[in-house]
Length: 118
Image (tube, rainbow, N blue to C red; front, side):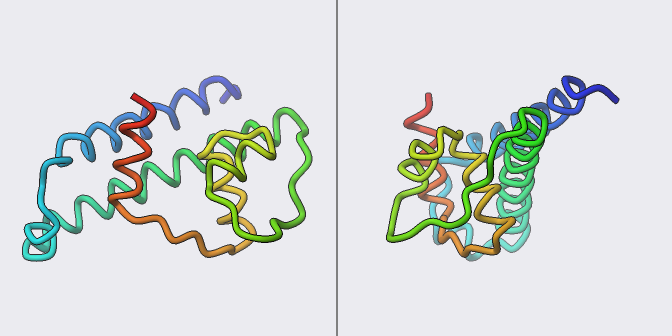
């Protein structure tokens, strides 16, 4: 499979998961906590979206032969880290995952990031 086809498949997964998450943006946190199936679906789609975005970032980094940051010193927001490294938000999340850096990122924060992108 060609690079562009792989990227297209990951983008399709990302769009599908984000579409589902957007469709549930009006759901209240209490409803999520009380409804196991809804919570599971939201968590799974969030996982799929992040994983697809991370994979896309990894594929682009590998394809372009871009250097990988060794570490991040101090505290930065994800956006700041991405900007400093000239990567997308999703690429920086991928780098954090690979290095096993814990990135606290809640569903509310994801919703806010999505709203800012629209």
